[in-house]
Image (cartoon, rainbow, N blue to C red; front, side, top):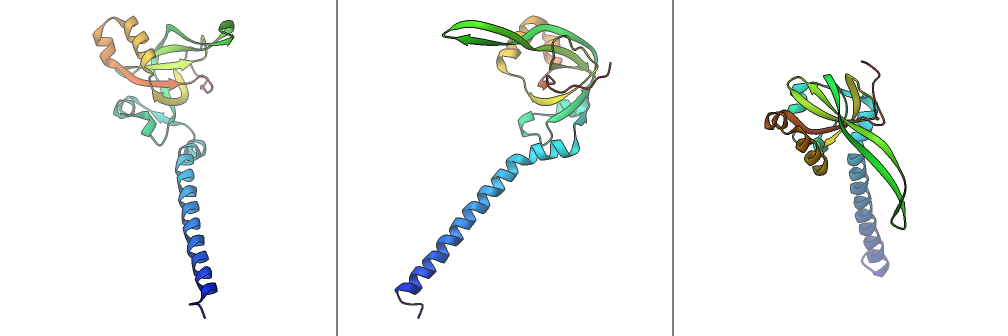
Length: 167
C-alpha cells in the first residue's frame, strides 16, 4: 500500500517536515546563543571586576559577562570628548557632547572610561568593549610617555548610560 504513488508522497512529505523542523531547531538554538549574554547580564546584574580580572581579558567581545562594575582611584578627565553631529546636505546643523573619556587607575593599570560629561567617579558601571583604534591613537598620543602606554589597558568601559553614584 505504501509503495505506490501516494505512499511515496507521504514519505517525502515526512522527510521534508523532518528537515524543516531541524532547520528551525538549529535557528532557534542560534538565536538563544546570541541572546544568552544579554539574558545573563540582566539576570545576574553587573559583575564586579578587579585589576587581575581586567588584565586577564584578551578580547572583551568574547566575554560572557560584559556588563561590569569597576572601582578605581584618581579618576581624571583626558579632555577627549565624544561628539555627535547632525548634518543635512553636508552642513552641520547641530552637535552635542555624548560622553567624555576618563582615565581611572585600577591597581597598577589605567582604564579608559567613557562617561557622561563631567561625571568623575571612583566607580563606574557599564559595558566593557575593546578600545577603538582612533581613540587609542588619540589617548596614547596625549600620554607621550611609553610607561603610561604600557600600563594602559586596551579596554573601554562605556558608562554613558549606566553609572553607580559613589565617590
